[in-house]
Image 1 (cartoon, helix red, strand yellow):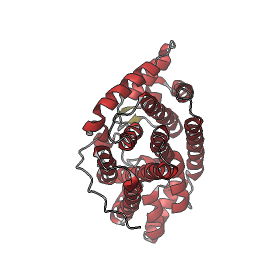
Image 2: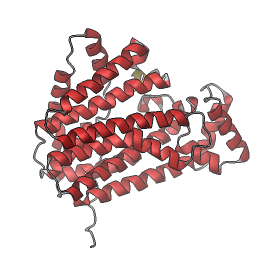
Image 3: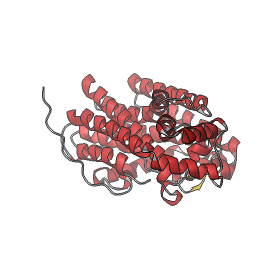
Image 4: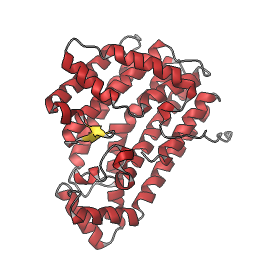
Length: 342
């Protein structure tokens, strides 16, 4: 059966969480849920959690959950359970950031010091644990086994993705398939769960639920691939992180994998040495040579092309959803994913 052509996504500016009027009220309600559920009698927990939440971010996963919910409810607002689960996915994401920054020894995120740089590694890890456990307290409230199954599976898959990424560090033989598996486990899985949860709460048919999950997973992969691009062509004041962070950590992301396969012999040797030795400092001549090679070799164009393929698949997946303002916003997210500068 031929499908009708998809409408062109609406125009986007810089941050999706700030630009969709149809969910502006939803996000305000979400912030109230987040503030309420962050409460703890242990002062340090609340201080660290509020520090990382207040850092901002795109709130992509809650945005996706709210938009899919609205689309399936024909633009009616999400109910209290949807807002509760939107907070859950944000808490799970925030916990992963706290743990990631400790593992990566990062000191800059979203343009300011990481929580571990301010409060120390121990506090960051333990508050991340608190956010995980608080999420599990919250996810039982809707009383739906399917909700708990999706979130439990997603959280476990994310942990597996973290370990897979750790195994890939300093390994110049990582290929595109291995790297994409890390992305799908570590990043895309929570995007996928966010969209799927909205479908479950809306009691959508199985085919629609699968389509929503496909949309989320594809969109999350596209976002991560563009993050890989911005690691080599972005600016700290825009991206909130230092240029070449992945390279300095010895992470073979897709631009480096492409360069290892298609660069000159000298470029391949330089990249292989940098990955095996755990990266190079930003003030080292090899660092600039690698960045120049990535930028001139076609590696970034190739990575953008792969991201666009994922975004295109995401657009096709939600052709099943009812037409309306929320569906247009979901389509717009796929455009934003590949065209953003931070």
